[in-house]
Image (cartoon, rainbow, N blue to C red; front, side, top):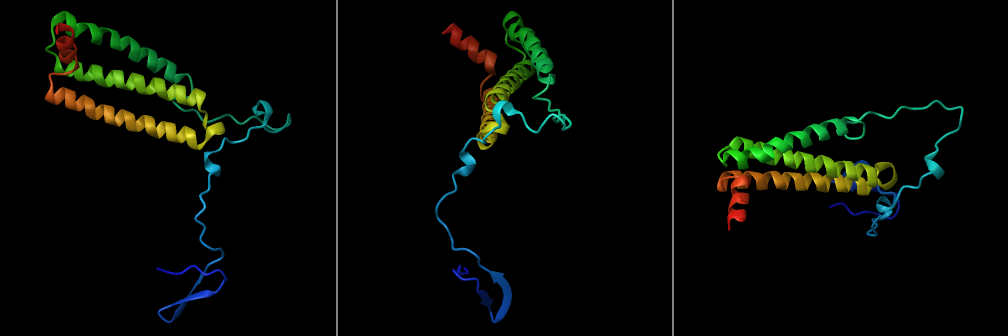
Length: 165
């Protein structure tokens, strides 16, 4: 391991001068600045009247698209909830589709809450951390759905056994 020198001397390695220069000493003090809120101008007004408006990039989660597919998913969940209890719990594909659709519905709802209440332009690191934590929770939930669908007879069978007990 190379020593870090306090002066800007060159470090000879195996008789060769590679031109590596150490400019500052190693600091063990952590940098907490990335955890702070990003300062915003009052009213989030940037620029002046004469500057042209820059249209923000369109994202499926941040525009009106998410309202459309959240409503479609919610309407699709209604018949998938009722069918297994009316006709009996013998539809493993419908059970898996219901679980994954419900997980997507919950994920997109929490993602919308994160976007609305922890905006990236203000919170930066915390917004990205919340999104990554949500994605991690969704992947763990997918693994849980896999375990319920393979080891048990599915979510609806589990609910029927709980209600029958």
